[in-house]
Every structure is written in structure tokens, then in C-alpha cells.
Length: 310
Image (tube, rainbow, N blue to C red; front, side, top):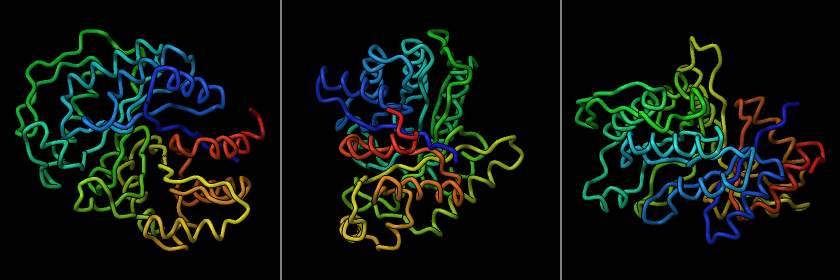
């Protein structure tokens, strides 16, 4: 059975604990350390990740995910390339279309409609990838303008830099099938009126459809993108029934959806491992991202998945 790759999403609080977390993630066998990118409410991802690079040797490093709606591609490509150099080739480019209205408003603009966010994402993603590949880019589309943009230095160590798409838009899932190395599924649906929270989209049929779109986009490629799931909760317990009922209430979903979902790990470590095998078989999910508050339980699961090795 294929052992899934597991990464950690976290935020720095202070120098000592951030360095300790990076070392712990590497020692425990996590694939990468990832940071959210929400300007104004989270740390600068590339500053935090560069610090983590200094105390690790193997751990992958990336934002999860950068906001294409407000990030300028030349600056973003420069951040990724610099991180790749400082880490010796461990950076990832990860992008989503963005959803939080206040992040546009703080920069003096308004969140575009869905079609506008899709167009902007495509422009930023294509430009970033071209710049990291050493190309010069000129674009005159309303969503984004560049004139002879070139990333002369630093040049990334990796060619190409791995590219992760994070999101659930149907158009972008199909596009990501043709272009991304990894498609990250979050289980998040429509943005709620507070501009931050989301409806859950955990129905198996919804995930079936998202994976189908990725596969359609991947037609003609030698290999479809890997699929990754963002784990919203991890609870190692012998009382899975009680935990599932509580989690269903917390996330506003049903018991059946919690049990079927790749977005929650609940039960004994063996039961969770069995669930990841089912998710790999049905949806091709072979990668997961867990969040720092759940790291103690995630450590137990990861050790089991890796055959009890530390």
C-alpha cells in the first residue's frame, strides 16, 4: 500500500517555537512545512519559510496558498525563487484565486466576481510559472499588466519549481488538471457573509465531481496531478462514534459525510490509515496537509502509516 505524504500547515509565534516546529516536522517525517498567506492576519509566508529553511535540510517549504488576486507575479516569483535558493531547492509555488473580500479592500480595490477572479488567477499563475522558468513576459490584459518582466536573479535551483493549485472552482480544477503538479482539495464551499468562513463541501459526490474535472483537464498528459486533502481535524480515539457526532455538529455537516470525508481523520490510527487507503482508491488522494493544533495526534497517524518508524 502506498504511504501518503503528509505536510504541516502552521504559523510562527516566536523564533524558538518556529524553529522547533520545523525541526520536529522534519524529524517526524513530514513532507513539507506550509504557511497560510492572508496579508494582515498571518505572517509573511516567505519570511517565515526562509527562517525554517535555515534549521532544516530536507523539509519542503511553501505557502498554502498564495492569493493570486492581490499578489503581483514578479514579486511572488522572486519570493519563491529566493526561498528555493536559500533552502537548496525545496520551495513550492502554490496559488489560489482568493476569497476574502477584506484582503482586496485593504489594498484599495474590490473583490472581483468569480469570472474575474478566475481570469486573474490564470494570468498570475501563467506569468509566475513563466518567470520561474526563465522566460520574459509581457501581458496587456485588464486583469494584469506586465512589460518585459524577467526574473534574472536569483534563479531557482529547481527546474521546474513544483506547482500546487488550491481551490474548488470548476474552471480552475480543469485547468489545474492540465498544468499543476498537485491539486489541493480543501472541502471548502461558498464563502459565507463574514468573508472568511465557508460552507463545507464534503459530500462524496462533490469530491467525485472535483476529481473528474481534474482528470478531464489532465487528458493528454503523461501523468495527472497528485491529489491532496486539507485535514480540518485530527482526533485519534477509540470512541470514533462519539467524535464523529461532535465533529458533524462543529462543521455543520452529517455523520455520514464526516466518515466518508478525506478532510477529517478520526478513529484509531489503524482506522485512519484504512480511510486513507479508501481515499486513495476512490479519489487518488495520496497527500494530506494537517494543521499544527492537531500535530500530536497526526504524529501518531504518520508513525503508523510509515510502519511504526519514528
